Amino acid sequence: MGSLRGKTALVTGSGSGIGRGIAERFVREQARVIIADRDEDAATAVAASLGSAARAVVVDISDEASVAAAFDDLAQAGWAPDVVVANAGVQLFGQDAKAAELDLSVWRRTLDINLTGTFLTIKHAVRSMLRGEGGSIILTGSPTGLNGEGAEFTAYSATKAGIHGLARTVAAAYAKDNIRVNTVVPAYTETSLVTTITDDAEARAAIIGRIPLGRAGAPRDVEGIMVFLASDDGAFATGSLFAVDGGMSTL
Image 1: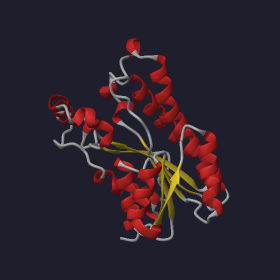
Image 2: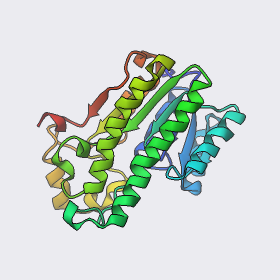
Image 3: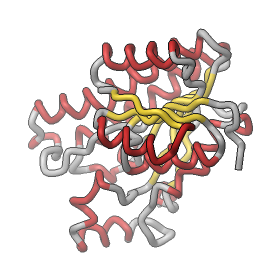
C-alpha cells in the first residue's frame, strides 16, 4: 500500500457504489481523496468515514457552473486534483428502452448526466491539470458501449460508447501536456445502481451466464486497475481501454 502517496484524487459519484469503493482504496493507497457527489449527505458520510485524508464536495456534473465552482474551490483550498475519476452516471431502469420506444426526455436526461457530465468533468479537470504538472483522468465505461449488452438501454449504451470515444480524443489532444486519459470497462457490477437486476433472479442469472468467470463483478474488482492508472506505474498508458469484465469481451 502507498502507491498513491502524495497524490490528490477526485472521484465523482463516490457517495456510493463503485465510486465509493475506488475512493476507499485510494485512501488506503495514501492519496488524499475528494468525495464528489450530488448527494450531500452521502458525500459527507463517506468523507467522514475516511478521516482527514478525504473531503466532501457537492457537485452536479450535468451543470457546468457547479463543476467549475468545485474545481475552483478545491484549487483555492490546496486540493487541486492530479487524479480525476469520472465515474458518476445514471442508468434509468424502466425508462431507457429500445430506440423506437425511447422517450426523448429519457434520452436527454441520460446524455446530460452520463456524457455531458463526463465531458464537463474532463474539461475542468484538464484546465486544472494544465495549471499543474499534468495528471491522470480515468473514465468508467461499460460493455454496453462495445457490444449488444445494452440492446434495451439505448440511451445508456450510447453514452458509454461516447465516453469511450471521448477518452481517446482527449488523450490525443493533451498527451504533450502530461495528461493521461484512459477508460476502465467493468462487467455487470452489483451496486445500488442495478437493484432492478439484482432483485430479479432470472435477469441476474441471464447476465451472469454471459460472464465466463461465472459471477457478477464487485467494486473491489476494478480498484486495482484504477490504482495502476492513477499511479506513476501507469505513466505510459493513455488513450486505452481496460476491460475488467470477467471475460465478457471475449465472447
